[in-house]
Amino acid sequence: MAIHEKTLIDPDRILQHDHLVIDGVDVSGSWNTMISPRTLTDYDDGFEKVIQSYAGAENVHRCWQCGSCTNSCTMYAQNVDFNPRYWIYLIRLGLKAELLKDKDIIWQCVSCNKCTNICPKDVRPEGVMKATAHWLEENGLIAKTRSTMFDEEFTEQCIEYGRIEDTEVMVGFFKKSGQPLVQAWIVEFGKRLTKHLPLSQLTKMGMNVVFRPKTKSWGKTGEVLAEYVKAQKEAAHHG
Amino acid sequence: MSAQDTVLVVGSGPAGLSAAATVAAMGKKAVLVEKEDVLGGAPIISGYAKLVPSGEWAKDAIGRMVSRVEGDGNIAIHKQTKVSKLDGEAGSFTATLSDGKTVKAGSVVLATGFTHFDSINKPEWGFGTYEDVLTTTQMEQMVSSGQIRCPSDGRVPERVAILLCVGSRDRQIGREWCSKICCTVSTNLAMEIKEISPQTDVFIYYMDIRTFGLYEDKFYWKSQEEFKTKFVKARIAEVTKSPDGRLLVKGEDTLVKRPIVIPMDIVVHAIGMDPSLENPEIAKIFGVGLEKHGFIDKAEQYTNSQGTTRKGIYVCGAATGPDDIDSSIAQGQSAGARAVADLHGRQKVAV
Ligand SMILES: Cc1cc2nc3c(=O)[nH]c(=O)nc-3n(C[C@H](O)[C@H](O)[C@H](O)COP(=O)(O)OP(=O)(O)OC[C@H]3O[C@@H](n4cnc5c(N)ncnc54)[C@H](O)[C@@H]3O)c2cc1C
Ligand code: SF4
Ligand code: SF4
Ligand code: SF4
Image (cartoon, rainbow over all chains, first blue to last red; front, top):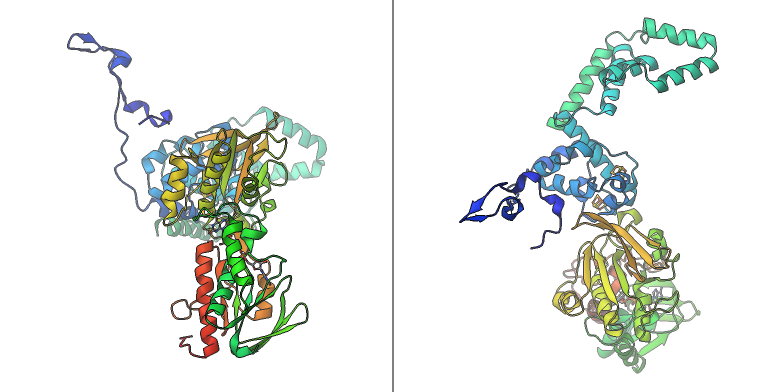
């Protein structure tokens, strides 16, 4: 059968000897190329359920592989390897190893929801992309994305102080994601801010950074909240 | 005519024509009420070409059904007429027609059919925007005319694309059913196009091919093997126009895993079968229920075949959901027989 999809051949399946002589005939290099078979040997039956347990992916089982999501997808237009239709197929059958081949681009979904708007089965592929990215992160299969780091910083501050302070969140986020605190756009932003905000407001912001006020009588609320969030997460994905 | 020997049949498509003929053949009288000025239903009103599976021209095949009914002394025909009121109950109904006449009938058969999906509701597929985007009914009319030409400039198309499931199987627009016949109709249409215009290549864009039962080899396989129809597994996302005036179909070829933007000369929408627009009114006038998609609801099918939710009123054909002509005819006969049995007052029904 003709190979109609060359990208399906992973480099490690191409077997080739640089120097090979058989029966006195030199068959070095591409003359001896072999491709080892790409046989899938099992399905991970529970995988679809795992992905479904993340918010937004509940409808993944409805997909019938029409390709409308992929075609409409903003990211697919940039990179044809970004293929929500294909990933949904892998998720449904539990072809985890195949899915992991694309682990480094799945998180790139920009949540434009074009897919969700066109899908004839109401699968909501955007939610599935998000869920898959979260699953990859939670299982340490990919590095934490910046948006997750931001979310974490934000949540930590909420839980500790009962409120957030913008500058603190940004500083924490930059530290977590290994970015320099001084960036050209921040400097520019600061300059414009000082130009337009009244002095009293600026002073208040400065004080907040230094003294970190808590919400009144926050007390143990933070701890309780943290417990609750943890329990919810565990119940959702491991219950 | 008395109520005891008359059945009122509403709608004169294949189902209604068959029901009326059955009633007359069983020695009773049928009053056939049709809202249009011609008999024959969708195949005649929309000018279908050759029918599946018989291969006969619609005007001949359905025409025969019409003349059988028109020539029958036991069948009274009211064209351009509707039922505006139904009084009484099973065994003694009185229907008031839109022309003021009244009809007494012991039982009623509803054969009010379906409404074609209006492609305007799927604007991304170009219907109403580009002249060379047509529906299957328009393409059937073109086949009947014996010439395959682009409506925009009269050129012979190099390529025709048929998009399946337009207005069917789509939650976005609340059509959660398969229209059952459009796959077969489309594979047949592809053959008809090729027959008239051998230089035209036909491509069918599909998600599933549902040429059920014996339609598999006779239409799907034949179309692919003998008439060289190409089948592409892709749901087209958008139809646009290229600067040279040809149409472009865009989508993902799911088997190749690649985006496609393919030039076409004509794009055909394989439109589905919607519940009749009349159904809410019919439900009210006749006091029958509708099922969740908006078709007329059927009673328990095993012993109360073709029954509705109301005693003495039967239903057949595409009024109950998407169906083909052969099944509509069979259901018409079944409903006709049930209605006549009511006149005899000899039915055992577990309701
Ligand atoms: C594009 C297309 C092609 C098709 N080709 C084929 C084919 O080749 N072979 C095949 O087997 N099937 C085909 N079908 C399916 C076929 O059209 C239906 O099976 C058939 O028409 C159903 O017959 P019916 O009598 O139930 O309904 P209809 O044909 O819809 O007839 C209903 C009749 O009732 C009348 N009516 C409606 N409401 C009222 C009212 N309130 N009062 C009075 N009269 C009323 C209508 O005017 C109409 O005359 C095709 C369908 C489509 C969409
Ligand atoms: S939401 Fe994500 S997957 Fe959906 S179309 Fe946008 S980028 Fe693509
Ligand atoms: S559009 Fe919906 S049904 Fe179609 S492939 Fe994408 S997720 Fe599946
Ligand atoms: S018969 Fe074919 S074209 Fe028609 S709705 Fe069903 S699958 Fe789609």
